Length: 572
Image 1 (cartoon, rainbow, N blue to C red):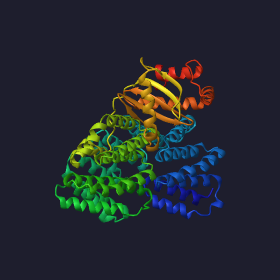
Image 2: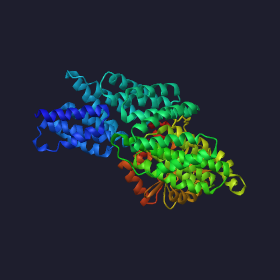
Image 3: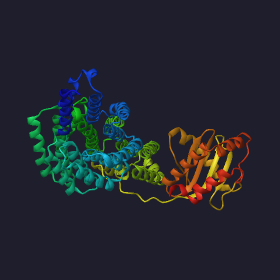
Image 4: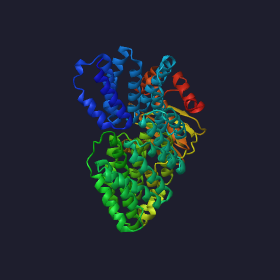
């Protein structure tokens, strides 16, 4: 093994721990003659490159690159390198929004770490700290903020005596952010200040900015201005692209707090300048630009809505729309699914103040689909309950179309201020009450409207009863609208209908009460019947013969209905 190669690789590794990413990258770039590397040198080099990729936020590339590294390290029996590659791959997947994949990988890494720790004499606290931090990130994605806080504190305790400034600083910043999410501003500020003391340069200006955000949330504008001076001083010493953007961003945010319209105009101008800035490539600092770009757009939308509230000029809504589209595009590109959900909620509320109720419902449906797909369950419950509430208020909103209500009045009814507050401050979603619905009827019909299977759970429902006839009429009248508009529910008197097309059938569920658990129930029902040949094949035969399935014709179907809609076992 070449002493000079190992010396250079070790130097690059230590530079990464200090946060000097560009210098580490230059060393890696200089090691071009890899054909002369020994096997161990090659693994060391490739692990360095994997670290550079993820610390430069190239998560897709890191995810792919670690596959080869894992194979080679496993082949060489180098379990420590394999563990590090596994951790990077898990972290990259979590950052890409692939939470289930990231969780599977971290479980594998956890088991391997226990195996290595039992025999290794090396200090593995840094690897363990990273492992615990990834677990904390997964908890954050799941909305388990208290658990994430505990894990981040554990990650800090493991890292605090090491020389790895990145691990220490990241843990402190994460702890600070979790306290911020929970509304504990004092502790949030305390841990952000401790992160500043570490002097990990890639996170330093971010930590100062986070304190400004905290102080503004508390209404301490004077204190926020004091910390802004520190950002100004850093910018004077280092006029890099990212420092300039962060300087302009916080200057705009502070101007935005002013009651004077001329200062808000200056704020708007600065925010628009940042939005029009091309993507930067400042290595590991790029993540700062990504976060601030998102919140730059949100703050600009907030400024425009303030203007809308003051002026009552409807054309301002049209001015906001392109920025909302930028926010959607960028959030999707960066896998910021929480922002996607909240932006669809913003779109729904803007549609309501424009009295476009159908469009508002479409946005709510899109938001819930994303929230459920990526594990934001508390947010999904909140969105579902809001959709239910809107259905109850349909008459009120329809009547507003005929009235001369002002935009300000409609903004209040649509709770637009509340939505902007949620997006700007990114608070933990307070758990909404979730109640089980009262099942009434589960029905499978052909697309022509002929019943194939029906099970009622409430007395008074039968094929002969006028209620059932009315239900079928409602299904026929709602189905085209729901499937063409991408909606997931409709109102039929005091009942709610959920319908899903499962070719060649439509599955309908009628119930009373909240929709969230009802939606989970019907999804499970559909998934099961499609994947169970003992149910799916007989249903298709009855459909082809134009016959109605009786209760005991398909025992598996009868048992499934009992399990899901009567015993409700799958949700407990």
